[in-house]
Length: 246
Image 1: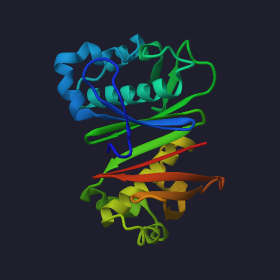
Image 2 (image 1 turned 180 degrees about the horizontal axis):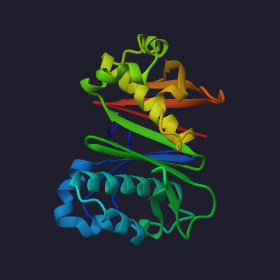
Image 3 (image 1 turned 45 degrees about the horizontal axis):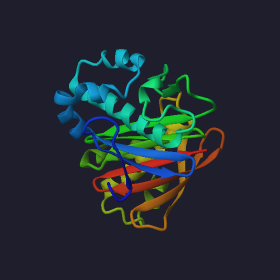
Image 4 (image 1 turned 90 degrees about the vertical axis):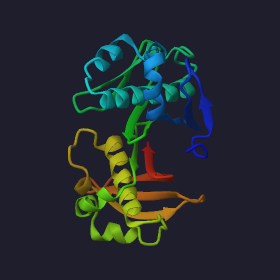
């Protein structure tokens, strides 16, 4: 994880945040296992990341797992914002803006310091939460690689898409399927946030290795309007992560 998320951020307390800064976007990672351990003794420090509106929303969650996922995702997104928006947001004051879900669950950024378009996307799986912030619209998804994905193979991908993964050296069939999953999930968050079904609405036309090991780039097409989009993918240990923007 630290090879990809190559920068470290500390805001308040002991939580270690990893992020990767790129041109007009940023990706950040929160270890939800670490956050869960810190909640007992550093709850106020962790909650200081949130606005009053976000704290009210967080209080709705009664199950610790969902509570931790939501909090981790917002902290990851705020970390991205602090790295990309130092001129437009109060430095080191993530509680001055809010990231709340719209009617479709999409995270929407608001705050008195905002002065132009900025978009966020959030995902979590097993141990990790990730977020992306970018000037154009964006989407990010992370998924743990597990055998259970084999049960839904026919729902995830077409026969043609499965052929695309045969030469990618992902390590296993479940890793290849997870790669296809995160591509479509990231693209859905970016271009189809209001559409419940995604797999039949997105066609993966080509997947090619990038210039580094365990990195790929996919060319995709929306089946309805033929719009095309590039999605980038990286394998992070037992996880696949994909992101796109623009």
